[in-house]
Image 1 (spheres, rainbow, N blue to C red):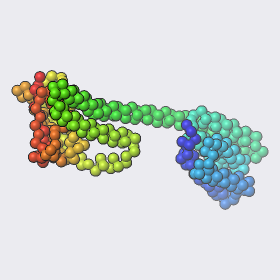
Image 2: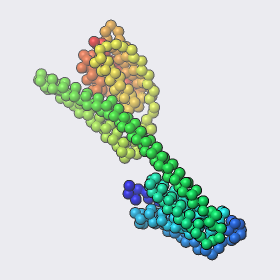
Image 3: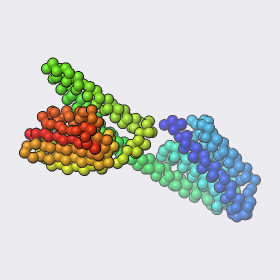
Length: 359
């Protein structure tokens, strides 16, 4: 992954480094075990002052995007070196040098992974042990076991970070698969069915032209063009919503009143007729949800005397007086040899009545 991908992360790490530097200065200043309360040796003041300047410089570089490709490795080396310097000037029972090493390990773990974290942990542990074991500072060798504890903690940080990275990768994979299934269902149940309807309509036009019924074929083609244009607009809006480019789409959808639908269906027929009947009801449901601005809708489907009767009704905007029945529904009804009745402009909302032979 490119360094530019970690810009925000490096900026946050730089902020934390500045806070660490300030807190370290304050803790040593008020710690009675480092020479007395409100006391700071010259060496400690110079070392921590340089660390504060380095922290501020790293923050400025990250915020201004300067040298981003070199920032991770350079700051890691300097973090470890400054931690070693704090060991030399302020190691004792309550020394903050341990925090500097831990910070260097955590920063690497956030940026990369287990391998680099383990490498920095081993280097920090070895350096810490050498400084404590061979330091001329009197009793510093008594704290040599801190290097072992640091190595153990660094390993645990890297291991837990690795497990979390794997868990997050698994979560992303599951979310991606779920999103793919959702898109596949939307394409299959919506746009693939619309294309099937277009194919049926074109077949009807071909038959009309073969019978020299050009006027009727032209009417069918005009309605087909209107339907294809509508589906095109829906596909374009859907694709833009997937790409998160149309921010107004969500606001528009949220402004549409929620539609409450009631479906009551019980019928038996051949598999082909049942499939067509379900697709007709599904198209009526979609029209009520996405086009009619309806608040309530009812779909009834019953079979009696070998005939399936479907009623689709809602309280939305309805049909204009010059409107024609929805072509996706009309083509399926026609294919099944059924009858579609509707009264445009004469009903408060939409009302479709369909009769199909249950064969």
